[in-house]
Length: 318
Image 1 (cartoon, rainbow, N blue to C red):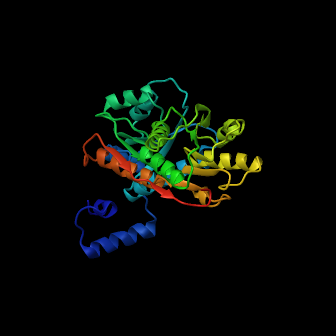
Image 2 (image 1 turned 135 degrees about the vertical axis):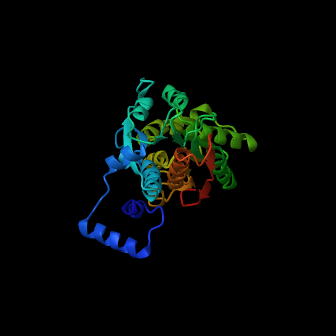
Image 3 (image 1 turned 135 degrees about the horizontal axis):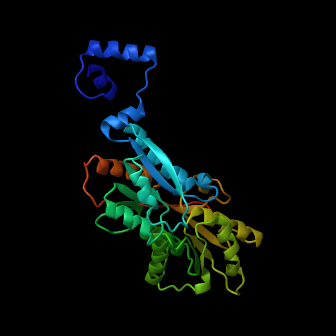
């Protein structure tokens, strides 16, 4: 029992006894058996993180920063994380629930989930601890941490308007995700506030993909009147737009200003450096993991619906 107290860091042990036991542990190179510990405690000490199984997912700075926040909190609490790639097009309603039943993890974090995904409802009905990151569902048995995406989009349009822009185009993300819909809503709300209009052909859907945004942005340059500014729903799409503008021989921001969303690391290194709306990506992961652990340990009641602040980061592209 005394050795157990030293290993867990819980309970009183006399200082001299603690030193003797720690010395033996260090000399023997002892490591606790995680399987045995989980069987005894009936907890796996693992958080599952569901990510979409898509090409180059681990090259995505957005995903990497969220995972970094989740991992830091997990390790601080003696937990590990288990990545669970799933096919975003899967129609198996019980897919998330099957992971929960496996007993491999004590809770689940879901990234890049889709609107009206029936797998979320099945998981919610089960009572298994889980949390959504950067996706909003206001329900009594669903927890989420998200950014203030509507406010962020309004900040972007306000900034462009203050710079004298009234002809503003928009590159939307995937309409299967609530954050993309919120940014589109914030864009339209801000235009209405300033009495501005945006032609339908000045709104394209880039699906949070740089190549798709680059390709579809062709229509911005096919009309007699082109936009003087382009607001992109994430930084990767903004980088694709910058490339397209340069290929037309136009200057940024003199001919067309560009603003993104997220503030990924690359945003400060592209030329010109990218003005963007910073959402606290690392904090989303960190906060989400801490809330989920609190729910698992019954230190926090559900539902938890938390929105994190965003801010405008001014750089050369506007």
